[in-house]
Image 1 (cartoon, helix red, strand yellow):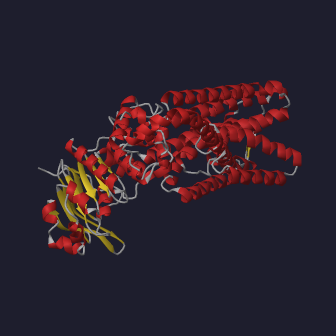
Image 2 (cartoon, one colour):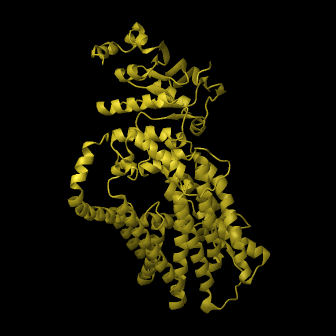
Image 3 (cartoon, rainbow over the protein chains, first blue to last red):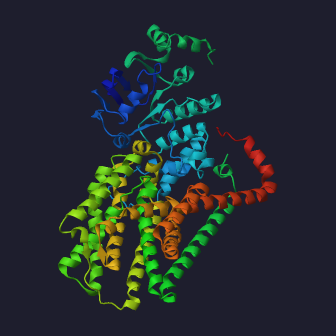
Length: 257
Length: 361
């Protein structure tokens, strides 16, 4: 069976720096795939290439059987690939509900529509409210997004990516910079979404988060895949320990739940 | 917990407040519209109604500029390209086709269409770049158009184009211009209001906040920006055509006037960038003020200095414009007042709600 999302032998250089070289990553349908590696190993670059924010130097990206190499971001999104950013990017001067509706405009797109119709029909607003309730920020729907805390912004970004029902969601450090109880909350939400059929590709430095949630983990180092497999194999792989200079081992010292 | 419990203030009161605010705004707009419509009947002096026509042209021009620049955040200092294109279009057409009488007004849609057509290649080039680079590109395109008007023979070079003699009664000469400018102004503000609440407007405002993020949520940004640019140009060209008959002459430096670019931007900034009423209020205050000062001091430079100082004062005290800053003040005053009222009654319920709340911060 072909993977839902596949980056095949992708290479990308920025000036003299080879961010990715011959990198192949697969995301199986229905999985939560983790993407780990030290800073500068090319994780975010790979995200940017899959979602059309960067162009490849070589290699291809496939969504199912369809080749989507260098498709612009709006097309990648239309094909069912949603993403969040490492440094959360929301629309600060729109309300939380308006943030949701920007993405909702592409649900059930009709060929012809009245461009001056009010933003957000009833169905869109209902779906948006459901997702805000699901992520736990529905109480802020009418507030300007600018007034949200950092953690709430992470939740809003997750919620508005989901509003268009993407097949696969790419999360760039969903647990980065948020407090432990919120990490639990985010992790539980991702698990619940996955159970209802959404596929995830997650970049994350928090090893407990990755190992607890993902059913497959790919490790990048210097833009190349050094290992790929189930979390229990990956956490003991010497190449992975080497890439992380032993930091994984320290993480492992924490008592397992 | 129920969603209603999480929305904070009592929804019934909140809706009531919103409705009352909307009623006030609607009522205010109607009163203002009636006053503006009756204005030439009360003040029949041609000098006064001339200021009225100028003001209404700028109401519409600033509202049109705001539909593009205010909502998308792309600050254009090249809208005089559309104004001049509209003026020259009717000027050249009237000269070559020798139209007279009321039939000249039939040419106005042509002015709008030509300006909109000009906006397509202009936009396709300029909208590839953002922020400061975009501003610079619009200024550059503006000067290219002014130079072309100076140098082509069909534009009349430095002597420009004059309209055929319009044999209208001098006493009521201004009236058709006044009411046409008013109609265009009302139409543009109405369009601006429709766009602001529409999905198109939401996409524009998303582009203003974070264009790349908007693309990643499926917004086809080039198409959206270009559409707003063309709509804005259409109205501006229409106004240029109207202005040509009003002045009955267009010169390269008056049709393609850098002062026009600065004025529409200043008006929108003064009133409130990206708001529906801001450009209207800005033009109603600034244009008569400018004309009044020019007449008071008879020295154009002095009035410009006074106007410039006024603008600096606004930037210092109301940096986001009069409308947004004052509406914020009113909202916070209301919130404080209703907070005091609600505090006594809701203290018990709020404590109970907070305990069961899983609200991540």
